[in-house]
Length: 621
Image 1 (cartoon, rainbow, N blue to C red):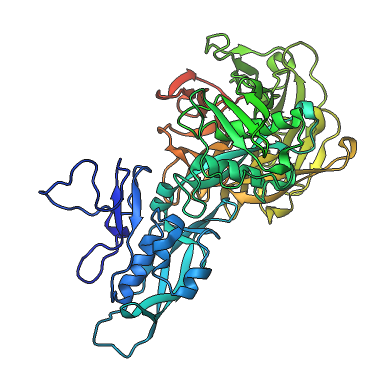
Image 2: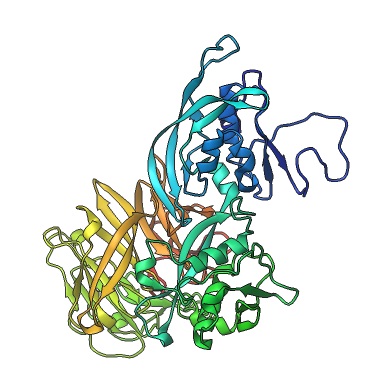
C-alpha cells in the first residue's frame, strides 16, 4: 500500500479522498460525521472494491513543484468529471490542449518521479523538469483496446513553469504528454473488461456468428463523456470494432449510427427492457438487420448489468420503436453458433483409441469408445480433435507422422492419411488438430525443414498451406481454433521458450479458391515465459498452463487481448500436459496430467480424477 502513496516533505498525503458506499463528496458524511477516532488516508492505488469513489483535490496556494507533480499524478487516478480539477495542475494553455482520453499507459505500480529538493530559498528558479519512471506493462488506445507488453522501462518528462494566478505566481505543468498514466492497481479499480460483439465476415446470413471484441471501459462514469458503463459499452459498440479485429468482422449498424445526442445513461426498466435511442442513420433499417443489431447489444450487455436485460428495444431518432428482441430470440446469433454447445469430452486412452466422456447429457463420467476406426482401428492414435457437430474427428497417430479423419458415429475402414509429416524426430511432426466453427480442420507440421500450418476445408480434400507472415522465425508447436473461426491461438517456440499468441484469420477470394492467412500475431500471456498447454474457454478467454520467470507451473485464465482475467489463477494441479475448456464457461475445466490421469474442475469445486489413464483431452473444436 505504501509503495503507491505520495507524500510531501511533511508527510501529508496528497490529493485524494475515497468514499465507500456514500453518494456525497469530500467532507460530507453518510449520516453523521464522527468526532472521535483517527483519520486514516485511503491509498488511491490500493487494490479493492471498484465502488470506492475517489475525488481529486485542487493544488493549494503556493504549492511547491514537488507537490504539484504528485497532486497531478494522484488526480489522474480519480473520478474527476472531465478532469476539471486535474487540469488545475496545468498551465491554462496545457489544460486546454491536454487529451486524457487519447490513451492510457499502465505501469506495474504508480510512477516514480525524480526527487528534487526545493524550498523558499530558491526564488530565482522559474522552471523545472521532472522525470517520471516505471515499468510499462500495457497500453489502452483511444478505441479502448488493451495491448499487453513485456515489462519495459518507462521514462517521460513533466516541465513546470511559474504562471500568474489570483494569488501571484504559481507552479504549474506546461508540458505534459496526452493520456493517463496509471499503476496496475489503479487501472483495475477504474476500468473493467467488456466484450462487444460483431458478426464474422464472409459468412451467409443464416450462418451468422457473433465474435467477441474485448475493450476496457470505465467501471462507473467516464470522466470525459459523463456516460455510465452501460452507455459507454453501447457507444463503443456503435463506433465499430477495434482495429485489430475490424478486417474480419461486420457490424449490422449502418455506418455513422450513434446514440441520440445527449444520451449519457441507459438502464433497463422494471420489465428488464433496455431502450436504446439511435440517431437518424438507423431510421430506415429493415427488421432482419435491426434484429441482428439488437442481438449485438444484448450480447454486449449480457455480463455487464446487475439487472438482467431481457429485451432490447432499438428506437428511431423520433423515439418510435425500430425493433424489439428478447434474449431467447437472440440465441440464433449465439457467439459459439448455438445457445448450448456440446459438453462431451474426448481423449486418447492407453491403447491409442479415442474415447468419449458423455458429460451431463447422459449424467455420467464413464468413458466409452467412439464408433468407427478411431475407436477400434488398427492405428494407435496419440492426439485427437473432434468436429463441433461431434460427427467426425481427426486423430494424429502415436508417432505423430499421420493425420486421419473419420466418422465417430458409424463404422468403416480407416481412410488414407489426410496429412503426413516427413520429419525424422516424432516431436517435430504433426501437432494435435483443431476444428473451427466453419467446419474446417487445422493442423501444424513442425518439420524443421518444412514447417507449415495446414487447413482442410470442411475436413476433407487436399490440405492448403496457410501463410503466417509474422512468425519471425518461430515455430508453431500447438494450435486451438476459436468457435467463431476468425481467431487462432498458437503456441510458438522461439529462443527456447513457448509463448502464447493470438492471430487473426483472413480469408480472401471465393470459397473454392480461398487464400487464407494468419496475420498480426499478438502476445496473449506475456507474463508467462513458458506456456505448455492452452484452450479457448468461452468467447474471449483462454485457460493457459505455464510458468512465470523462475516460477512453478500454474493454470490460469487470460483474456484474448492479453489482459489478466478477473478469475485469475486456478487451484493447483500437478504436471499438466494438456487442458480443455468448453465454449460454455459453466462446463467443467478438464486437464490431462502425468500423475493423476484426467481430472476435472467444476465451478465452485476442487479437482477430481475422472480417468486414471489418458491423454490429449479435448472438448469438440
